[in-house]
Image (cartoon, rainbow, N blue to C red; front, top):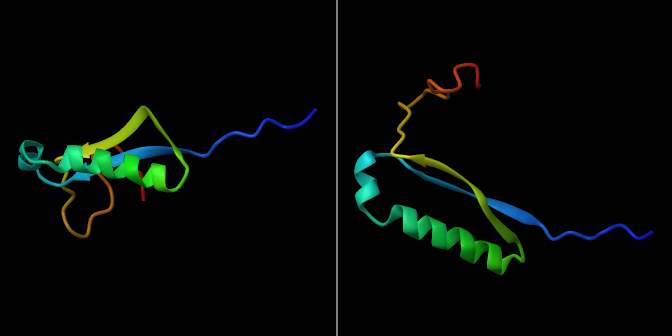
Length: 72
């Protein structure tokens, strides 16, 4: 029996630092860029999971946040 060949899958990660950027074009632009990247690189963009950090700013020099206090 031959193994089933599956196509590479990608997930999108959208991020911007300030809440005021939700009023701008960042979300649409980054979503379109993810789709274009996948098309150029023969990847299937799985939209069932899109990781988003919308308006989240971590102070310079810090590498963790409230939600994941033990994350390095």
